[in-house]
Each structure stands twice: as C-alpha cells, then as structure tokens.
Length: 372
Image (cartoon, rainbow, N blue to C red; front, side, top):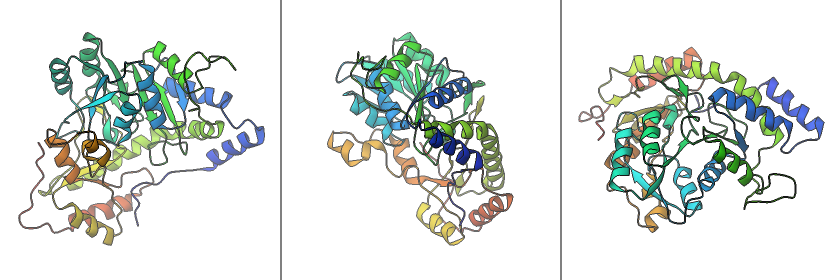
C-alpha cells in the first residue's frame, strides 16, 4: 500500500536523540535555542519561540494579542479545527469567511470586504492550506491600514513562499506545526515566528509560565515548552526540508501533468508568484467515496482534508455557527481528496498512483468539479 504520509526518521535523528538522552538535559535548553535560531533564519524571521505543538502555538499567539473577551477574529472555516479553537480558547469569537475555490485559501479581497463590513474584527488568522501561501502580503497591508493584527497559520506550509518571501514572518506572528505528517517534524512540536518582536517576546513568556526569569512570573502563562529531544530531531529535519520540498513539488507536478486532462477531476493550482510546498496534493472530484474505494483496491492510500467545515462541527453548531453562508467551503468539504505526494514516493509509486487514478471509470454524469 502506498501510504498518504510517511514520516522519515534517519540515523542522524536517532543519533541526535541519543546524544540528548546521554546529556541528561531533556527539557528546554540549549538545543531548543539552537533550533529556534535556525528556524527563524530559515523563515527570515527576527526570532522564533519553540513550543509543544502547533495548536499550542496558535493558542499562545492569539493570547499574546491581549484582546478583550469577545473580540472578533476573522479566519477560514475550511481548515483543521485548531485554527478556530485557538480563538475560542482566548475567549474571542471566530468570524468565518469563505475561501477561493481554486486555491482553497482566504483572499485579500475577501479579507478587505470582511473588515469593511465589520469594524469590530481585531485580527485576521489566514491559513496557508495544504502548503499553498495565501495573498499574505496584501492581507497584511489591508490589516495594517486598519490597525488589525495578522497571525499566519503556517502549520502545513514549511518553506512555502509568496513573492520569494517565506511564510511565517510576513504577518505579526506565524505558527508552524511539527506533527509527524508535516513537511518536517519533531514528533510533536510547534514554532512561533513573525515580524512583531514585542508579540514574540510575549509568546515566550506565555509558553514558559509567564516567567522572564526563573521563579519570576510577570504574566499568566503555562508550560508549552518544547523538549530538547524534539529540538534535536527538528534540527536534522530542517536540514532535509529544502530537498524534501523540492521532491514534493516534483511529485506534484508529475501527478498534475498526468491527470490534468481527466474531465472528471480538478488538479491543484499553484498561485502565480508563489512556491507551493504540497503538504497535501488535493484534487476535487464528485464521486469521492467510489474513487477512494477504487484507489484503496489498487494499493493507493488517500485521505480527506477536511470532510466537514469547522462551522459545521457539532461544537460550533452548538454556538450558532453554520456553513450556510460559506458555499465554497461547504462544497470543498464534500469534494476534496488527498493523494500521496510525500518525498518517500519512488518514481514507480508515482506511476502506480497515476495509473490507478486514470483507470477509474466515473459515472456517465460526472464531469470536472466546479466549485464556487
């Protein structure tokens, strides 16, 4: 079976972890500082704060804004639920906007319209979904002109760029995840980057019990620190990331070149001026369940990211949310399908995936999915 994801743990990672274990310094320490500095440099960020997960990073980032209870934060409903949960955890309220049907992300025009219609929105939390950068430079300019913060959700976009600039240091803050299926991983872990150094410093306090120095607590905080074990793995994975992203892009381009002519599916689009790092290779198709079953029988793993909008999750429905005014997000939830694209795929694997998809016989009524 060709898996949808395949985390890589090599001899370098194993040796780095063994070295940390032998040192006895397992928790936060010099290894974490080293990883923070290296990742900040990779993202062109003035600094970085390592934490225990991407979700923790989002919660820390939103909390660092210090917004009054009930403040509104604009985001997308077509994402993993942590994108909205971090807003709820900070006692703020998410405002969901619809996404672009071709790129699956918020657009600058949508953000501008939402901020014009609702001046109570205090921050924007766009997601660089599947490894595709949104119109982040323009979104930041729009938000900045209105005194609105921008937190980039970069959980799936390690190394993605817009206008040659890596995501994560264009907004006030950016948050990455190092979950095992991501483009690079630390087992569990996260990193907060960004151009707003004052907010970065507040994040460092929040993730370390609100303590600028040992036993001196100036803010309410928690233990969201990264371990030295995770940082050691992260340093090894960061060194491999550029090569892995290159391979992901090559795999994605091979898939698109071979599948683009099929009238019953739509291959992913890469925005002009951007470098998509293809955390996921996502097609849209009408008869998703039948195609999944066909690919499973052919030995090709697939996944659906995501089968339900955040607004339609039971918890959010209990709060009065609905996707009724988010038609694109709603339709994408019913039509997206992720195919394997990870760098461990061989050329033979790519050909197997292509052959399996092309051998699918759609219903006579099926045609390419038109979203929006």
